[in-house]
Image 1 (cartoon, one colour):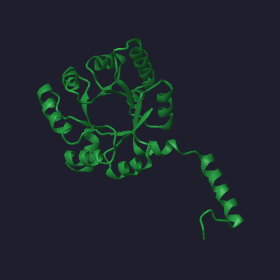
Image 2: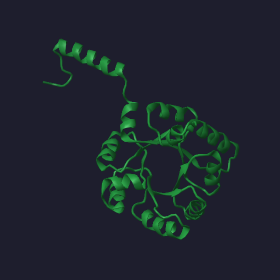
Image 3: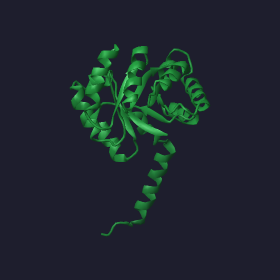
Image 4: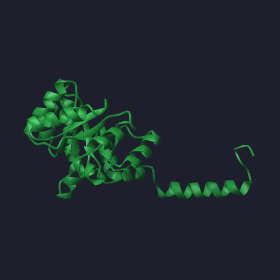
Length: 220
């Protein structure tokens, strides 16, 4: 499963990119707004730090404006994936951009029916929001499972399922279990994937025992 960092924090992207553990980055208008910097500057910097796709979202809601914004965004770097809202206008833009060979990420998906339409429009990724469905008492993982089933029924649908709005390592685990192609999450959730109290305590014990030997693996 691909792991994307959901952030516009340049320092966080640089740190995670150096680890070799992330396959791309997703952003949205809210994340860009938090930086207080121009979107073009932020996206260019992120795109220069990672080899994989960088999702940059349009702000328009009408087809013509989305297409104009998409044209600007896709020229910022070769690895830009244009992010579009899951509306009829957004799907229309997705179809056009996809036909031109531009990678697309259709966002704010909350039902399998929406995901089916995004795949019909040729979306590269469909961002299915898990946490926001959980917030209103529904099961976001169930929607991922339905999307996986539907996409598997039709060989002509090549859209990748991107599990989004993941708040905890358990969300990530559940997304992987149902076969999501990718998952995007805040940097702190990525950090938590590597953590466990027994790992921490075990390492502390190993280091104490090693120090007691007085040895050094490196030459002195």
